[in-house]
Length: 294
Image (tube, rainbow, N blue to C red; front, side, top):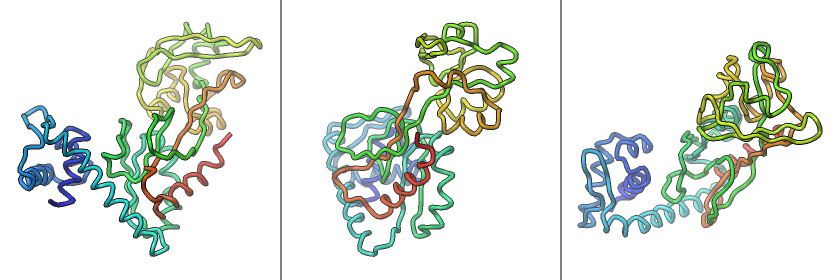
């Protein structure tokens, strides 16, 4: 039984797709298919039923999966323990994180990190899907918003505020809303296709209204050019909006309104020793984000 075959099986079962697993592992689809077949041959059982459109774990596959994940976790933990012997952070660091965080927060700090730690090879897996860490090859997750209960350790990196913003051209054409109720006459761009709550306290008495978006976009980084282009009003993370508000490309509406806050965490397994490469990367993130804290 080869460790690489176990990793392929774990990723296939996580994504339920040989093609997606191959992309995630950086391998040809044929290599991942052979790894699964080889593992099944070594074990003498069928782990997954395949069809042209679907994959499904067999009873044997369902039984074997947690054991495979435990083996992979133990191997990773052993590697982590050995890393500390050299005293210098080194090796491959795999980080799973959402697109907006990757582009606006993490990518800008990478040049300095790479200079400081040239022996660390960083792989950023940029994806907005939910990640089940034990099934991942990632050493570190960066996640936005509330955390689910788990045995993972979370370190707070940043508290971000949502700023309600519009471009000067949009406001010149459509008028500047004074109260939340005025938003019924405006084009609202929402984060995801869900009803949004809008707050203001322009009169000293807080108001709240819930409205569906006219346009729904599931990533904040994609919201930004739409708002800059004058399409409407949207909540943007402060770390995205701040430079454009500062140079008057965006107007922040109702800055005294009740803040909508979101916490960004770095997450890693509690049962593993914190490797040098993960520790220095988290420290670099904290230092980079420090100026963004409220």
